[in-house]
Image (cartoon, rainbow, N blue to C red; front, side, top):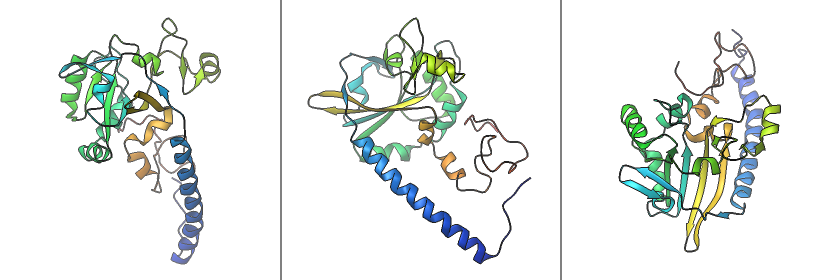
Length: 242
């Protein structure tokens, strides 16, 4: 197993200080990126999307729960499945009440939406002990319109802003359920879609990955560099099953 080199404190401090300069560059770059994200234009939501929750049918505006912003986590749960996606489950396990309360303090609601019927979502939510709001989009076009359910018989599939041909060229079959996250803003003029992120862009929802990124062994997945840090590297599936 290839572990980090053992050095003196002075050598370690010098290497750490050099890395700190790169980290500061990344922080400033991220600040600029986030500012550019806030400058993105937005698009009006004209469709009357309907969802099912514990209190019956709800509109998209209802999901805001009276707040100005809404973050929707697109949780992979096909109507034919009995359990939710393992990777989505791992991320949802880390969605604490503290996360939700902090978002509420900034006038923002976070909710999960899946295509499975609400009865399945409610059972799985109770089984996992989750407290966040979770709604079913079953029977609506919501998942298809936000490119997290791909079905060529419904609409031309795209994922992470790539069309079907580009996805297939990458060895990626554009069919089925996929993860993502979408943000919405509510004003006196209506509801607007401001941002959506997919694939690895959505991995920040939990936090375990970013804590592991600070450790010598990292995420312990096969794609990471340097190689050989762990005896049995895992696949790049954030289900934390083992």
